[in-house]
Amino acid sequence: MKRGVCVIIALFFLLGLLSVSAFAQLPVSTTDLLAGKTMDVGDLQVWNDVENLYVEYVLDPDWCLTEYHLHVAVSSEEIPQTKKGNPKPGKFEYKEEYDACIVDPVLIEIPLNTLSSTDVAIAAHAVVYAFETEWQIGDEEVDACDGDLTNYANEFNWKKEDSPDDFSLPVGDCELGPGLKLNEPDFTSPFFVGVTPTDEFPYNSNCDLGYATDFNIQWYGSLPLGGRLTISWSPGASKKETKVVSGNGIDETTFSANGQAQGGNGWFWNKYPLVVDSAFVNPLPIGTHSITFEQTEGDGTFWDWVRLEKPGDHESAWAAGEDFPGKNWATYFNYEIQGPPTPE
Image 1 (cartoon, rainbow, N blue to C red):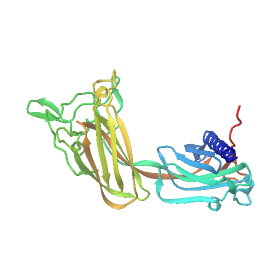
Image 2 (image 1 turned 90 degrees about the vertical axis):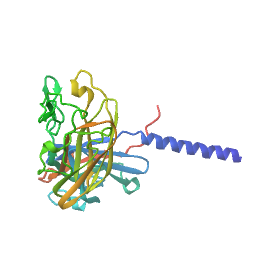
Image 3 (image 1 turned 90 degrees about the horizontal axis):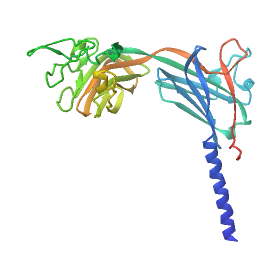
Image 4 (image 1 turned 180 degrees about the vertical axis):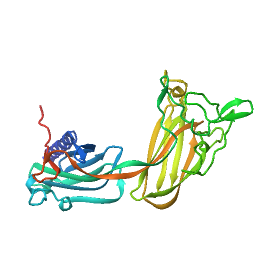
């Protein structure tokens, strides 16, 4: 008798696991997040399991979020709005304001037992900002050399040999400069953005030779809502390169890459493929700020450019759907709570 009870309990437990597994495989409903009515700045993703409804804001890389307002109701009429039918985001049930502009996805969990219907209306609003360049060192490379990219480091201190004892700037866009073994040009550290000439920025970080393995960038300004530091660099072919970035407002961040040759794309692109990495910068007050770069592993990498961005213009964004009856362009959409799929 006891054995039979145990079997029944085990069977119910197994069915429960299968039910949860089935819910875990349910599809995610994705809706465009539109700013200014027409600009697609990301997605709003909605799904559910046996316990919760999940709503997630996912911004495109060039946008960030400082606040959201979310409301889930049994019908659009139950979403807080004025008598004229304009929604009131400040009255929405789920909301948050941040001190910094958020780049990571924002997830809201809503218990299903708080919803009185399996068919719901969702209004999702956000305040979003477009990133704009605060400063940049170096140029983005373009295809301008008979199918090859222009020289990554030609605006930096990569000097070409004019004679055995004479090196000069610049290396041409499509011209091969010498390696560090021929010449180790001077570079300035700290490099002060907007003050230090660009040709005093190191074109390479080389652990094997101890050249520019550690150097510092300083800049003056502020980031009231935080920002994003992005570096474009090139690991040597088939070599593992590691950089550590830290500084004011930047949690220590490690970037690693394995170089892979890109055959048929020119002498430089063959050996040094481009890698782009970013780190978030916390809000900073007005003042002089420091960024430190360390090359901790690898036989040498080329710098392409370094860019600091900050949130610029902001927009009101809504998850795309049906218009509210008011005169503004706010929208809502409908979602049906999903159950486990019926076995075939």
